[in-house]
Length: 282
Length: 294
Image (cartoon, rainbow over all chains, first blue to last red; front, side, top):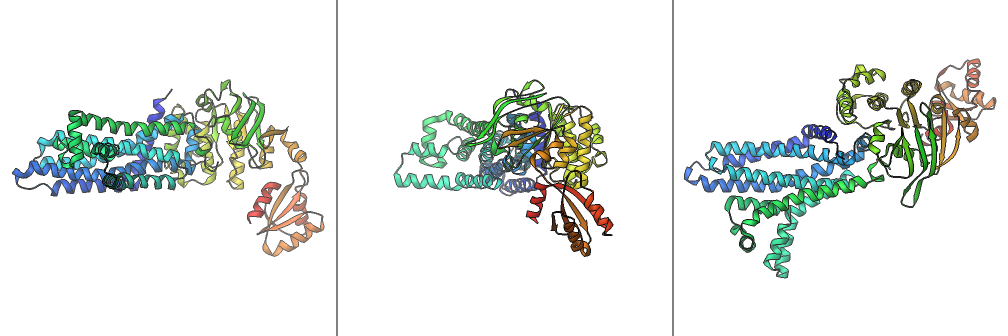
């Protein structure tokens, strides 16, 4: 039985800790600054060009999210539980009348709140700038992209927590998180492309492997939101549009939700059974 | 109050607790004694229900393996070294008070109990080691639990902080709290405990009053005496001539003493007009560790 007052207590503490974290503050300022710069400088003065330009700005914001959000989500999650374990704070917290599920959920929700606040600030600043420049008609599309960024951030945080649960030391958890970030952002894409070319992999296989990456799910869903089809992605995009049509977007959304839930459930399951591992020096 | 029956804990092939059984009555102060790895901390973790075990364990009628969270609500816990989050003393107390479902006003009461009320707005990382342990004790007392579990709570404290801490715990025991604590310090066990459970390799090997522990285990106690550098050699010679086992260590001299002969070496030095700057009484195991480190 989960006591949600305990979850809320831990969530509030984690939220406050995250908002005091210098690295997190630097990230927030950097993200908001770059988002503002993209929205301010990529919009032309000529109003006839604004509609096409909105898509260009939104695509830049999507690329910004693809680079920044996984990094902060993964590292924030990876450092949290492992850090507390290493200092001994976790063992002390677990000696209180709280369950492990409450502790992990509280920590996750606190960091999720901080992460979503950062994204809201960054996208908010960029959104206001876009609106002031006359792109109000694209508000729905913009808000949907923001929602997708939220889902991606939560998925990355879940994966970070999974790293944190299974790694014994903070350095190992952070190393794993950075490797995963590198894999998802760069190596995964290049690897799939390289393998597809060298093995002449069928186009549907290429699509499914690529789409299993939560970053690709976010990217595909964002492009769909902006353009209504994936022609820009070439044969794989055309295949996906033809094959799934209107179902593709809900499928991608569901995929992102699965990437949030599965690692989080795995973290909770592993953490609830961990014994010796939880205690410093044990 | 606390009943353990055939408590067994295995880490892979290693058996940390081996069919350990004991009963602790309400209001007792029971010490767990044993070398590192004897099973003291594992026993305390089982009491807290933060690790699984075989056997039966009940605290105030609560089955720990079935309802660990409720068992923890009946316990106040002080670890060897408490790691707090980056908050002020009062924020820390409020955080744990919420988890313990206690009124926030209790924070003031427990701060007074451990004499930390003057430090309530300080950040926790500004507190000394002794103050941090007193804060941990304050947190343990927040929900006014019937049982206090202390895991070598004075291990990292200086002599004065140790005495203050033990005195506070003594008062709590006198007020009716059941205390279960582990310690390496014989003086602490004698000062606080009403009974000692001696553990070795996860088994209960001896159960006795604290006063009998040194005798039954053949433990020696050592007097650590600080004298000025120019008197150190003379001190060693005088004590050696009087048949004491001695050992120099930095600015101090260790002298092996019996339980009823602690004052004699000090009197000998006084007769020889050697001013003693300070002294401390420690048990043999600790002395060996300290000299090893030095």
